[in-house]
Length: 69
Image (tube, rainbow, N blue to C red; front, side, top):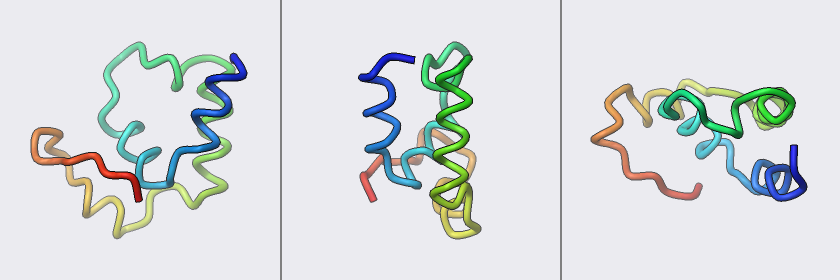
């Protein structure tokens, strides 16, 4: 994991982490290897998926506007 990847993960909101987790395509560098393990750790510390976030995101990527919350 690079310092830049760590900074990017640390700066992400719980909502944006949930969005990335649910809608990232295969090969997302933030969700692989040591970086992916760190992403998962931080996401869990921030509360993982709440029912509200999950409902807000839905499962249809085309209907989602990624906003920083």
